[in-house]
View 1 (cartoon, helix red, strand yellow):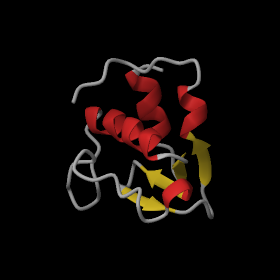
View 2 (cartoon, one colour):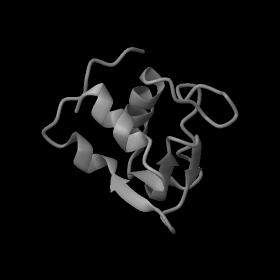
View 3 (tube, one colour):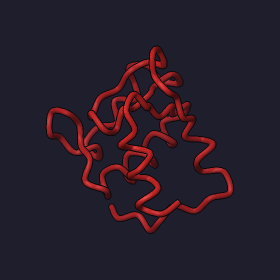
Length: 92
């Protein structure tokens, strides 16, 4: 996926990204950070992933900058986004 495709996904209303592992969460948050997103508290996604709270049920609302559950949202499983796909070059 290219940067525009990621940004289009992140900007969809009521869309969250399920990260079943902390590794997936970190990969997703690096992409979000590279595109200029951050936590609603204005802290960088790279400072803390907040995966500990809900663990394998952690869903990120990248657009609004918070973690949530699956309820009342369109859920995209991040694992499916990374299968056989190479994201754009990430910076850390």
